[in-house]
Length: 325
Image (tube, rainbow, N blue to C red; front, side, top):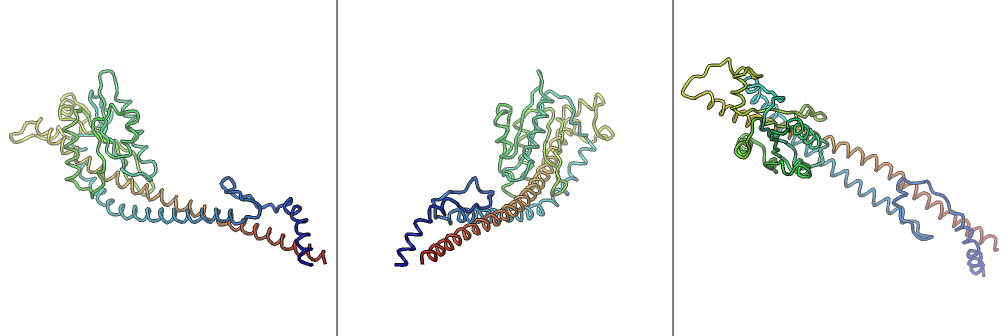
């Protein structure tokens, strides 16, 4: 008899309970929440729990990538600092004049093959495009040599016809001078130039890198600038001895200078890439931690609202049963 009264009173009270639901605290995930039918309260907490699991997995990945980048940075940073002594004597001897006006210019853009390293790739692309605009003209020819997959993907969109050579996967193996000298020799054989402008990111610290342009002139332009009193280094203060002519010596010096500058530029760019990736992964890990804190708060609020609703329904049912006696 009592159970029949409880069922009858329960059916009478359910519409009034359903008409006045308990308002839960708004969640940051309200736009992504799945709304279930009346009486299904675990679906929203399950969505938040799955999101928390995904964020935790992403945080583990970003922390691991930061550690890998730090290890690679330590391995290449010392070599990059030591390589600076290779090209500095050439700058003192032949000079470095990025504003020189020539007919044939080649812009060598160094970038990375992988992403997730901040804005180092977009920065060198912007500098390369600016150099193209400065050196282009009616009787001037400007070409690109792209090193790295990321710059290649960006430059192919609007400068495909101006690209003479592309090189990718340079950092697949540990960098050494022999590998870079082969690359420099390929560039010299495939392009005609009066001036080579190498665009790369010079490493300063883990959080700082500077877009840099290094200029290598052809032997003809060096000799011409020397004759007209152009801006060169200390070349004219040396006397040439032996059977080689000045042109042959300048040819050898220009090729060796380009390979040394390329070696330093590749190492500097690799250091900048690893430092930028460390910073990016550290920021991603912190953001994942903050998101996890917000999701945990949302999950607790949603679960508490569900428990409160169930308690109210139990108390209402008990009150209805008590009133029926």
